[in-house]
Image (cartoon, rainbow, N blue to C red; front, side, top):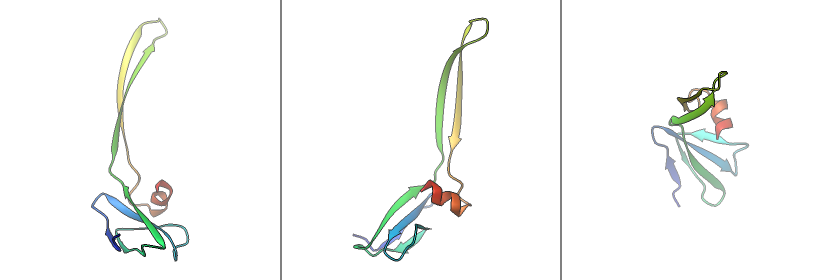
Amino acid sequence: MNMYHVAGPNEYVAITGLGIKDMKLCKKAYILPLFQKCTHIYISPVTCAFRIEAKSVENLPFIMTTSSEMCPPADDKTMLLLYA
């Protein structure tokens, strides 16, 4: 049971419980062990790769590969609260 929590470079500490209305996001905080809970939220980007198999109008099969990178916006606190 650690009372002092520190987030890494790509994460935030989300705190809920006694004395906090909704949720609090911060980089470092003291936690009351019996009354508050905290979790670490990672904001590192995640890459998802997809392989799509389809047919064209002429019924010719083709394979299309694509990838997308997703991550929560780190500069907007309200969006981070929704992500948490």
